[in-house]
Image 1 (cartoon, helix red, strand yellow):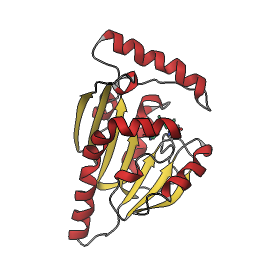
Image 2 (cartoon, protein in one colour):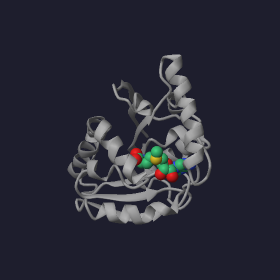
Image 3 (cartoon, helix red, strand yellow):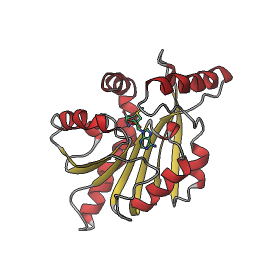
Length: 212
Ligand SMILES: C[S@@+](CC[C@H](N)C(=O)[O-])C[C@H]1O[C@@H](n2cnc3c(N)ncnc32)[C@H](O)[C@@H]1O
């Protein structure tokens, strides 16, 4: 994962920069309103911490992942990005964030996670619950392509992923925008991105934000 996320960041770095740009505006508006000077971000399916470099300075991160093996990678990665703080690593699935109180954070981040969670609607319900009113959900995922060949490749990936993952689960959701639209956020925007790359899971992406 550590090795793969380096490659992914090189391919989708500019999309991530664009996606996370509103975090800085959110931080500034909270400061202007005299509410807080630091942002609190819950990152679901944090993996090895591939998104830390994109967060504004002063961000407090609560990292969530069901795989406990990522903790050592997270700690080593956080030492490279001293502009952010890792407040806590919670070993949990996005479907059950009961360790996190209601209206806890300013933003929730999920990149390359929604495609393979067991219950995407439950994850979205938890995302809304832990966000403060006005808080933002940031998501980026690979999705089934518009062409049937891409769709077949997407589902082939499920088998490959099942082989490598510690819990033997694979990809489920090729069209997460349906669930996000139905999740009841106050505002929603997303865009489809088509990248020209040999890494087929990165060819068709969905990136967007939703506000509670
Ligand atoms: C493809 S990796 C993406 C990691 C990281 N977000 C990134 O963009 O590099 C998917 C991550 O989601 C985690 N994951 C899988 N199922 C999950 C679930 N139900 N809830 C939360 N995280 C999950 C995996 O352990 C893994 O760290």
